[in-house]
Image: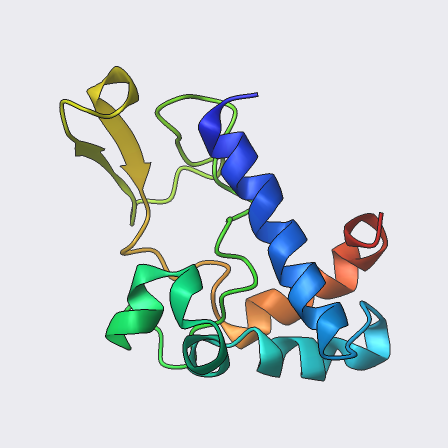
Length: 134
């Protein structure tokens, strides 16, 4: 497992743990609550130390009005590759180059809006609640 995969797994574990801590189970009837609790607006108030953007109160995806952080670890991100990538070849992503990164580059999808809107998170949750509960 590489560091991208490790980060992805830990992201979901943290989110699910936080939801359960406030009494929100991963059920279909709780999807509206899950979406509200994982919104950038809510998470940036309650979890300031979990993300540098929360401290800044500035979104990592500024083009999305109601950014939701549940899918911060995007299901379309190729975390199995050290430099990342996009499984759906989104034209909105690009490689970020830096000499200290693996292979001197990593996939940057900060301009992408796929999977971070309320509608997309709702659709994802409806299709993946069972596997997220494992």
